[in-house]
Amino acid sequence: MEELLKHAESGDANAMYELGMAYQFAKYTDQPDYEKAYYWYNKAAQLKHIEAMTSLADALSLGRGCKRDLEMAHIWYQEVYETARKNR
Image 1 (spheres, rainbow, N blue to C red):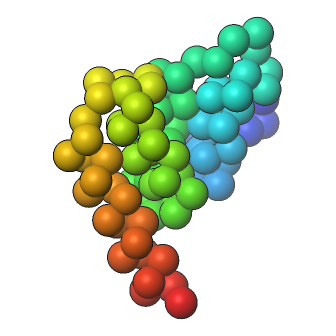
Image 2: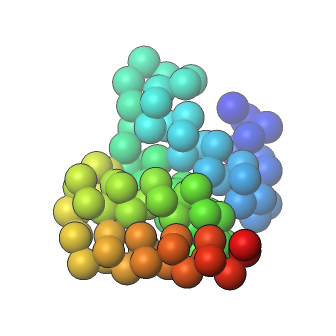
Protein backbone atom coordinates (compact mmCIF):
# COMPACT_ATOMS: atom_id res chain seq x y z
CA MET A 1 0.00 0.00 0.00
CA GLU A 2 2.93 2.34 0.63
CA GLU A 3 3.94 2.22 -3.03
CA LEU A 4 0.37 2.93 -4.13
CA LEU A 5 0.14 5.85 -1.72
CA LYS A 6 3.42 7.24 -3.01
CA HIS A 7 2.14 7.17 -6.59
CA ALA A 8 -1.21 8.69 -5.59
CA GLU A 9 0.48 11.51 -3.70
CA SER A 10 2.64 12.22 -6.74
CA GLY A 11 -0.46 12.85 -8.86
CA ASP A 12 -1.11 9.47 -10.49
CA ALA A 13 -4.89 9.39 -11.07
CA ASN A 14 -4.94 5.60 -11.53
CA ALA A 15 -3.16 5.14 -8.20
CA MET A 16 -5.62 7.54 -6.55
CA TYR A 17 -8.53 5.51 -7.89
CA GLU A 18 -6.94 2.21 -6.83
CA LEU A 19 -6.32 3.64 -3.36
CA GLY A 20 -9.97 4.71 -3.16
CA MET A 21 -11.00 1.18 -4.10
CA ALA A 22 -8.61 -0.29 -1.54
CA TYR A 23 -10.13 1.85 1.22
CA GLN A 24 -13.72 1.23 0.11
CA PHE A 25 -13.32 -2.54 -0.06
CA ALA A 26 -10.87 -2.91 2.86
CA LYS A 27 -8.13 -4.42 0.72
CA TYR A 28 -5.38 -3.57 3.23
CA THR A 29 -7.43 -3.06 6.40
CA ASP A 30 -9.94 -4.90 8.54
CA GLN A 31 -12.80 -2.53 7.71
CA PRO A 32 -13.68 -0.15 4.91
CA ASP A 33 -12.72 3.50 5.35
CA TYR A 34 -15.30 5.34 3.28
CA GLU A 35 -13.98 8.81 4.13
CA LYS A 36 -10.54 7.97 2.77
CA ALA A 37 -12.11 6.27 -0.25
CA TYR A 38 -14.15 9.41 -0.94
CA TYR A 39 -11.04 11.57 -0.56
CA TRP A 40 -9.06 9.59 -3.13
CA TYR A 41 -11.98 9.22 -5.54
CA ASN A 42 -12.44 12.97 -5.40
CA LYS A 43 -8.74 13.62 -6.12
CA ALA A 44 -8.77 11.26 -9.10
CA ALA A 45 -12.10 12.59 -10.37
CA GLN A 46 -10.66 16.10 -10.46
CA LEU A 47 -8.10 14.68 -12.91
CA LYS A 48 -10.92 13.31 -15.11
CA HIS A 49 -10.46 9.65 -14.16
CA ILE A 50 -13.81 8.32 -15.38
CA GLU A 51 -14.11 5.36 -12.98
CA ALA A 52 -13.25 7.65 -10.07
CA MET A 53 -15.89 10.13 -11.21
CA THR A 54 -18.46 7.33 -11.15
CA SER A 55 -17.33 6.12 -7.71
CA LEU A 56 -17.42 9.69 -6.42
CA ALA A 57 -20.96 10.15 -7.72
CA ASP A 58 -21.96 6.85 -6.13
CA ALA A 59 -20.48 7.92 -2.79
CA LEU A 60 -22.30 11.24 -2.95
CA SER A 61 -25.61 9.62 -3.83
CA LEU A 62 -25.30 7.19 -0.91
CA GLY A 63 -23.65 9.51 1.59
CA ARG A 64 -20.81 7.03 1.91
CA GLY A 65 -17.75 8.77 3.35
CA CYS A 66 -19.35 12.17 2.87
CA LYS A 67 -22.57 14.05 3.37
CA ARG A 68 -25.26 12.78 1.01
CA ASP A 69 -25.61 15.27 -1.84
CA LEU A 70 -27.86 14.17 -4.68
CA GLU A 71 -27.33 17.40 -6.60
CA MET A 72 -23.54 16.95 -6.66
CA ALA A 73 -23.97 13.26 -7.47
CA HIS A 74 -26.07 14.24 -10.48
CA ILE A 75 -23.41 16.74 -11.59
CA TRP A 76 -20.71 14.06 -11.40
CA TYR A 77 -22.85 11.49 -13.24
CA GLN A 78 -23.40 14.10 -15.94
CA GLU A 79 -19.64 14.72 -16.07
CA VAL A 80 -19.09 10.97 -16.52
CA TYR A 81 -21.51 10.99 -19.43
CA GLU A 82 -19.89 14.02 -21.07
CA THR A 83 -16.36 12.67 -20.59
CA ALA A 84 -17.28 9.25 -21.98
CA ARG A 85 -19.01 10.86 -24.96
CA LYS A 86 -15.93 12.95 -25.76
CA ASN A 87 -13.66 9.92 -25.53
CA ARG A 88 -15.59 7.81 -28.05
